[in-house]
Image (tube, rainbow, N blue to C red):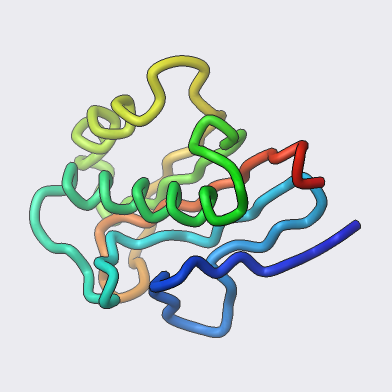
Length: 128
């Protein structure tokens, strides 16, 4: 099975990992923070942060030749589960039908003290 790192131009990386790794038809997207292109975190409403995380996921999936419609599993990490409703409202705008499987968990702390991080798995059969 072929394995390759997917690193879109300008993708912020905060450690020794790839933004995504494609293994056969599966693309494993590392957790995406609400990071702007220069690497700094977006602060402000959790809805805006959620949108930016999902846009970052989309950019990585697109670099591998897919779209958000190819996501099969998403995991959302929240620093505060009280943000769940606002996150869901924005998340729903990205997936109008047949959304991917998903988990959402509250965690004690996220990298760079972010409030949200989103990771995903995509299935790209034409790339396998």
